[in-house]
Amino acid sequence: MRVALFTRWPEAGKAKTRLIPALGPKGAADLHKRLTERSVATVRAAGLALEIRSTGADPAQFRDWLGVASVVDQGEGDLGERLARTAESLPVLLLGADIPGLLPHHLTAAAAALASAPAVIGPAADGGYWLLGLAAPMPQAFTGIAWGTDTVLTATLARLPAATPRLETLSDLDTPADLAHWPGL
Image (cartoon, rainbow, N blue to C red; front, side, top):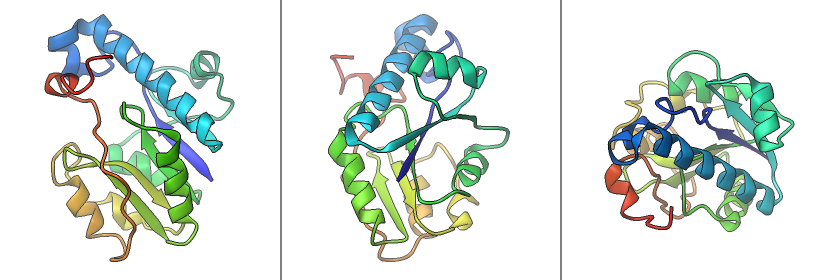
């Protein structure tokens, strides 16, 4: 089972930009750096193969930073197009790097669910999802989605098999209001 972790280079002014009003450009980038490193450690603790899907710097810089051999540039296009390209090689767990509450058991539960289902989804508290796992091709899961809105989960579920297992709902960290839930960060 491969986890494809989507992340960006932690450059001030370009990473976690919605957090800049609360943290400043460097603070937002530093938080993103810590979240990415935490996500990498969580995937490793779960014992799953890890691939970094990078943007914002050369893949070699990500290899040096994170110590991960498999780094692939996300490429062009909207989030749906980038996710769809990653899902061309299955099975895969698609994961963002901004889930502070992510623990190894969340990932092992996703892998276990995907062993007996064509898809699995981890709902996010904001109406999106924190993980989408696919064992069968489902390109329809990435088209016609209003990315970054509170309708992403509902729209994605409408494109997946009706019996798709749902994991525990987790929160991502996108906005200054989200920071209140994670004072330790």
